[in-house]
Image 1 (cartoon, rainbow, N blue to C red):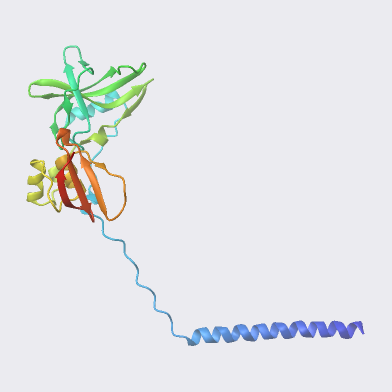
Image 2: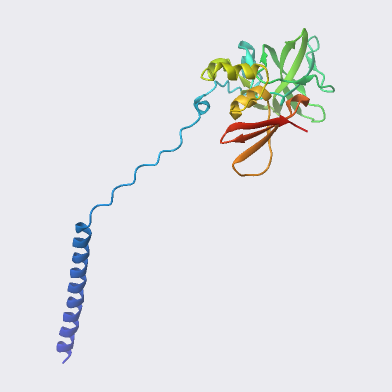
Length: 238
């Protein structure tokens, strides 16, 4: 009796396995009979702006000695109206942090003559790394880094181009360069070009298809509206 029951269980299991195998085989045949689904064409990313392919040279200065490489070639200011410079007494090798002399302008070309360090007012143990230059017969210094307890943080690579921007961005048309030289923002310019013409920009909060940026311009503010990365409106700022 027990053998008969065991035989029935085995037979039932074999029958279930056979049915599953037949069903699987039928599904495979059905899939093979269906026409192949054409592969979707690859979706290519939108082409990058040509400015994205420009890789300016960097010095990677890491202390006072290596920062003196700044004196070996002219430099051009990357972002105008952002960096304050101070009167500098060459005989005493001291900057007067008590009075601001101005802010470096967009793409302003400088011949740096020295790099030195001076204690930061109100910050014991900290020194400013200063790049010295002459302007209209007077000496000035602009901070290009910090030092504390022998640890340097040089940010000159963020401040300056070491190659002529006219060569780096030679693919820009002549009328764009003319507007940049005249510090004018024109309809159709992109954000790189506006930064070269108007200096530092401060984006307003908010999303959407349009982007609004305030450009202080050293007291001559502009409000620029961008659409799809291009200037679509310019108006005086408040």
